[in-house]
Picture: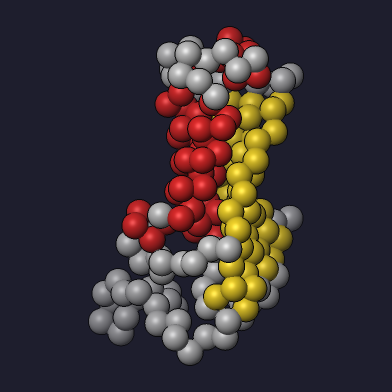
Length: 156
């Protein structure tokens, strides 16, 4: 049974008022592949729009904080930690984006972590599209989560 569907088949926000408060954490990852030229501009901090990684980090953090405004049935959450990090794979011209979201609360933070990665990737695309309009955003997924009724989970 889907938790966001009521007895009449209508979408609804899940009532979490009776759930226990637990520490919850989620890690998500995604990637953006780009041309050697665009990648080199990012690495050398020579993109005409400025600090690509720094701007993408802030955009990802903002996205996690605004997740409930973007995804209709997400609960607004008081996140206690959001981190967005980048790993540069120079051999393959790929930037791997990893986000971590954390709180003490009654519902998980997977959607916030996924939003952070997604918007960070979109920001990288926006800032680099003049150098490479053929970039590809891919492999966005939850890697790990902890806390809550279902406990810990990690991608195999």
